[in-house]
Image (cartoon, rainbow, N blue to C red; front, side):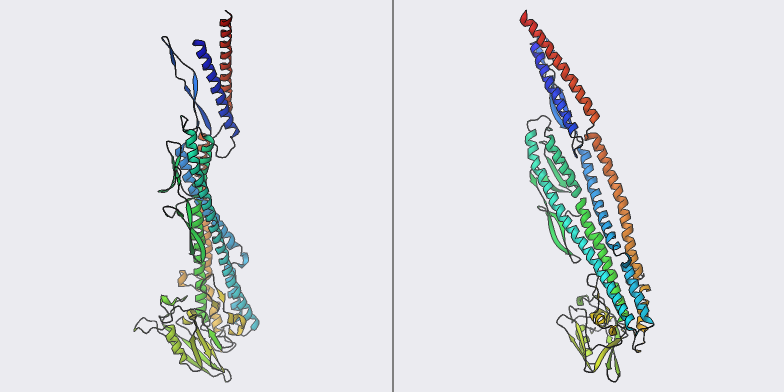
Length: 567
């Protein structure tokens, strides 16, 4: 038994040492493979046997091939990945926003506003000069166009983020499928193994899928006793063995743009705010870009309302034969300052003047139209009651269109002019205004003014050389506005730009810190799970020497058998 046992021992040793060389060779060949996890050959002593009074060893045997992976470290890496990807996605969107704002260069909104007000100022001393009037109107149109163009660019950026969200949903679902499909394959292969770690290539695929998934949504995982993994995001499961729960999109409209949110297919819990690149993209779309849209809308609405409030108290070189308000009043029976009227700005208690002028004689009849919005007596002014009041003025006909717009028509041989509006009613109804619209998506210049510069309201009734109203408009840019926190329009937009720049700078610093943590954890992972060519080369040399020694032992036993056979 002694020589036979030793021969078997040596044969097993050859298998063990050749297996060791194969494992080390596998590590060396994958040293530069992304995500590869180093494999180690585990050796155990073979069971001994008893020969007479002696207990003799039977050598070495392979206990298994185990990947060197620290599961706690992997979960830390996944958490860091999720945080870093959230911040990186936000930073990228900040940079895109800065680019869009900067693309206007010398025609950005501040320059456009200053250019418009400069052209208005040129009209102050020569209000009857046709060329100057037309330039001012053109500069106003340019300002409105620059605002709406910027809004379109930001809306396009937001739409691109929605496309990106859908792409991330599809990628995450593919990864969930992959993990779910790999679980039973790994379990089947390892069911006959001792250490549940023989399916190295499949496990590497699964860990790589987990790593990428952790960048899209925050996950944590645990390995089950049969070699599978359970994956969760927060308190919701994504993979439980072969059972899986995917991501799905929920369509909505936000700030006039179609967007998607993200929820789970089974629990219907929303996960778009939990973390990962998905959260960063959605926050960038809704909070960063959407927040800028809100600021731009506030800026634009204030520009429209405040400029028109001054403008509507003036008159041009000619009056209107007919004029229709730009604003649709949703409910003509409620007070004009009631939210149900859906006006872009709220009128207040006050009055405005209607001037009916005889074109032939120049004789003018001025009527003060009182606007009662004090909330007392139940008789506050509605669009319907205002129409009735205006119909009581000679040579004037007032009607309400089917869209809820106030329409005024002068009698034959007469025209309509306006003045001294202390209530803000004309601006709210879009009567005798310069700017149209209510926000950055629909701002424009009144078509009547664009088509005929004589309607440009430069004066207050003092004839062609009257520039009193245009002088007030020229001071508009420097006027502190309560709705903007007591700063001017120009200062307000500069503040918006500064806020974006500061936020982007802060995000860049935070992103660098988050990436530093990821790099540190990956360095630890490389030390634990990575391949060292020097170490693997030494292992090959050790296994080679062991193989040579076992081979010599077999040769020696062969010689001993030969001696026995020749005796």
